[in-house]
Image 1 (tube, one colour):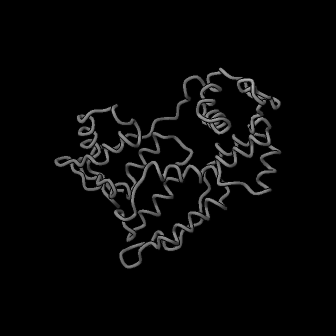
Image 2 (tube, helix red, strand yellow):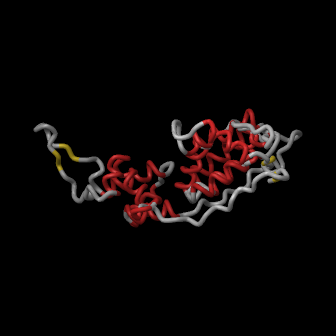
Image 3 (cartoon, one colour):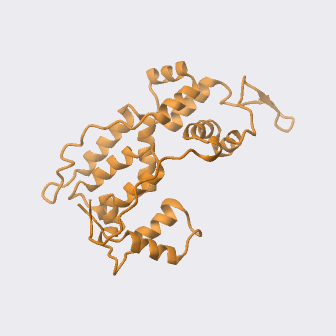
Length: 255
């Protein structure tokens, strides 16, 4: 990745820090997958006790109701449905044998496995463009058969969050393929480090025009998306912030 002379160098990613209150990715996914965001917040704050044996609850004096997630088997099955793309019999039996908590730990803390190279992906050019349908099939195969299903699930999530469009990026370069690899490499890592990779990703440089931005004529597309859609959200920054970020990020170029 080249950067124009005089452009500000992006700072190195800081060391990872522990969340205040001891909240970890393991705790978040464990609570959220089991019962949704509201229950997750209660559990993380220690306001709710974990369910033990199946418990009947009265609904306005009507027929008692038993939670479908009252047993550990049901919780493990729900975890695999939500955190992976489904599990075969062997995967389910392993998860049941390990138990819910150990399965969460294994899914979340296992780094993404390197997929086999996509044939011709690194050599894509004007005369030999990427074959989009074949690339999609290659990715689906990783989702269904790869050894790190949670990382693949997160790769898909980040693909929708840090979005780009092959129609603008084009298939006459490896950029679309490379972006998939980058999103996977950072799927379960540190967000600050990931944002650095997103900013300098060749496909993103082209899609949001940062690759043609200069200090004298900064393009604000990426800086606006970075704040509004990728990180902070609407209403948390001003136009001066967008302009300052656009100027600070100017100078990055496609390889």
